[in-house]
Amino acid sequence: MANAPVQRMSQLMAKTLRDDPADAEVLSHKLLVRAGYVRRTAAGIWTWLPLGKKVLANVERIVREEMDAIGAQEVLLPALLPREPYDATGRWDEYGAELFRLQDRKGGDYLLGPTHEEIFTLMVKDQASSYKDLPVILYQIQTKFRDEARPRAGILRGREFLMKDSYSFDLDDDGLAQSYALHRKAYQRIFERLGLDYRICAATAGAMGGSKSEEFLAPAEAGEDTFADCPNCDFAANTEAVSYELKPVDAAGTPAAEDIPTPDTPTIETLAAQLGVPASATLKNLLVKVDGEIVAVGVPGDREVDMGKVEAHFAPAEVEMVTEADFIARPDLVRGYVGPQGLDKVTYVADPRVAPGTAWITGANKADTHAKNVVAGRDFEVDAYVDVVVVEEGDPCPKCGTGLKLDRAIEIGHIFQLGRKYADALKLDVLGQNGKPVRVTMGSYGVGVSRAVAALAEQTADDKGLCWPQEVAPADVHVVAAGKALQTELALEVSEKLAAAGVRVLVDDRAGVSPGVKFTDSELIGVPRILVAGRRSADRVLELKDRRTGEREELTVDEAIARLTAR
Ligand code: ATP
Ligand code: MG
Image (tube, rainbow, N blue to C red; front, side, top):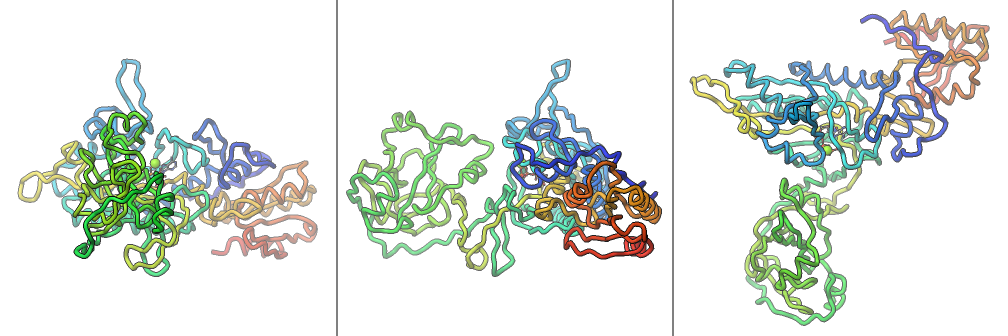
């Protein structure tokens, strides 16, 4: 590779700002704007300025190298896509409001790709005909479009953003497991090289369909995901994916269910107080409507229902809360006193904590009345067990029982075993060894390339500004000329020598900017090493500063060059 020319700040299209942008809520947003890496073009839509583009390109390069290393082949698909394949898989509708849909001049329907399963499937259908063509892993690094509801976290959640997406195509489940394992390894290498602190967490498949899936989560305050981490064993999962085994208990000793008068107890708190029992002894039944039909969701009275989990369970059906009108239309549903026993024509979904054999105090479906000793599986049936409670700190680890820790994190990557959902919808077969068609099985895998830049900023920044790991930094060294002509001359001389030796150099050669501002800017910009041509420039002595530790030392020109070019 040719050596990069010295980047001169006097010519750089990047203005640093003293103050945080008014609309910025998260650290990476504030710092990337202030340090002149990005500018907001519209809500969730960003322009990458030269320094930002360099960091983005470095992340891209690392991702590309590690994908190539597992034998994946890079391609580039269009972002502007026809509707038909997305109709075939149902995603034209199911993707909902996040999908950017548009029409061409003839009224034809198009979309801006949010992810490309359909188009990759069709590409392989077109190119591969025999088992000899598989397995294959294909990837692209490309702009994605999603009309996110809350594009508020800067680069972390764009409506237009850069993703590496790859897709594996295999003949059988073992093949898929291998392609998945290759990706898992590649992702570990990518995030290690990026210098990100991350965890691999069990995840739910969500709108993508399919079975096994894991997320790579980077712990950070600004994260929008919460993950549960076991301090004792290797269990880690997105709280969306924490799920418990159903453990039936023996109810033989539980007396028959019995109504008890409980005047004025429409809430769990009032009920528990009146009866002198803990809220956890009661069964709370939340009513929702799923595509217009009433569904009751049962959880212990001391737990909250995670609506996201309820929605995910019923997706793509629409989940709404019940209204006054629903209670009027269904006099059998007594507000505040609903119980699953004797509920007619209501689907009942319950958390695994409401396991068969467990006994509860719950509504008796009569005003001011509850029932006790109401046993799951005996007095009422559960149509489906779904993990619907909000996971709380201290909940038992599903693997070993130790109290879980909860932390905020940013999702930086996601790997899925899709299976045959897309191959079925788009009829992707190849001829097998025995001459018969074989339905292909797929995986899909994503890295948030632009999001990784922001995640790194979140994890590495300090109170002075950004603080990049070497491999992604926009330069290896930031040479600062304190201001006088002699200092600028020396700074430029050293910069040229370093660049000639293959070091990536950013030099602050701006005239008329005070040394104080230059030093502050160099810390804000966050190149790992800062080399100052200052007081002792006449003696050809410079000061080398480590951006992270703040350690400084004085070096002659030759020493500085030797130090910075050492591998
Ligand atoms: P999220 O839950 O954060 O919306 P997702 O589950 O929708 O993410 P995927 O569809 O799995 O994400 O996309 C693959 C990767 O692309 C994610 O792991 C994430 O790093 C990145 N990504 C997803 N949405 C965005 C976005 N709006 N802006 C930036 N990066 C994104
Ligand atoms: Mg999303």
